Image: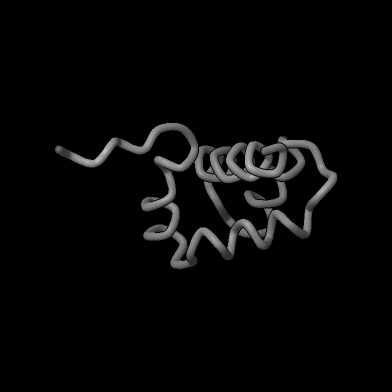
Length: 70
């Protein structure tokens, strides 16, 4: 039986790691430093200070905030 396809923000993780050369744990640690900020504020910091594209930054912020609530 094939492995279940990853859905949602985590589906971007392999591309994010390949594109930016950092593990997802690195980006989640960056987001830890932004705790208390809103989703789009996190996206903005990832884009302006770390050079991520909008889709990747959005996926990381969405995943981080969903995990934080869980």
